Image 1: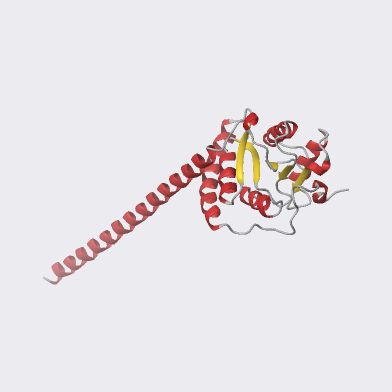
Image 2: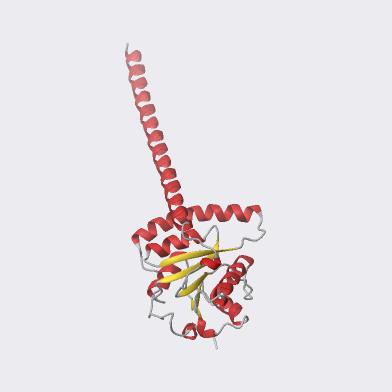
Length: 240
């Protein structure tokens, strides 16, 4: 009798544990499902919104500035293929008179890594006057590049240059910050499948982050004094 009672209690305890385990699994599954739905929604929302403002080079309205977003630069200052493609489009837009100023925005957080001086050198080598090229040394993220374009360089209307996978997010962020932004796609080179997949995965996550960040609107890593884009880009030079 006692043994039966012990077995009964043990069975009830086992049932309780199994029930708790099922509830735990269901809760985790629901949280995971909700997370996936949120990621899919925000990713699609940013992509669709930004894509509405991607236009051809000949459709670009006269703007305050052309913003060319940074990408990898080698230690010896050679721009990567992906960055060179952006710089080429920026040059053509400038040559067509779409804007009289260019903002090259990228990462210059260390002495041994400098995207923006390499970008400006590209334009100087094409005989664009130094005063027409502004360097944003603290464009560590796309959000920070757009925020600083608005509050440091004082732009209201811009054309943003980047690749197809990236430019919708940049436009979304800029417009959430109150900038009338349009985008022109730089060509995408013959990248490996690994690079393409990696970029798409990274960008999907980044779009979700952009959706939240653009709503919260935190201040960037650095602000500083204003540098009106209608002035001279030489004030951003940090090398003789």
